[in-house]
Image (tube, rainbow, N blue to C red):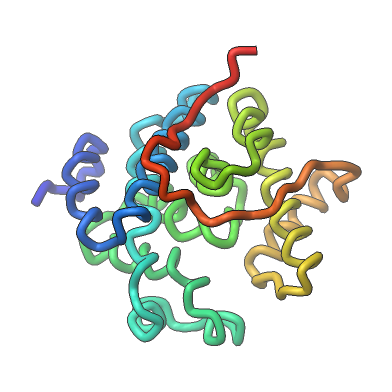
Length: 216
């Protein structure tokens, strides 16, 4: 097992091999697409491509665990967590990574917050959140993905606003962490005047769905 105490982000292949047997095959395809996209977004914005990629590889390590195990790893913070345990899979993933020896707070936060939104607009967290919501296998949010290469902050705002809008339009509750992140953005930049939202979709099982940049 490689040492992670020094936080050398050079063992992504090892960690990918460790994550692969813990998730469904189609989940791992999604993980690879998110990691690739998070790396590319980070590169375009002058951030650590290695850290963004590794966070992408690790972000869904707990996604296919059962409800009881999820709640054991990430005890409910709210009634919504208890009613819908899948919401806590980001926090559960952080617990797993801490047990594996990861200590870098930026990476751990990015993994934890990919489900509910970055709490403080942390750049690597934003990269992973935007990549997860817009990776090509979902078949939606291409505009958010393209925007992330030139204006990551705006891409994040659109992604979060769209998520809240989508949930509210469906009469679904918004997680307290997501609403807190939304309210922080509104306080900083005002309520959204206009943005483009598409139906959120689960990741595609198409193995050929890979990130593509527009040539226009």
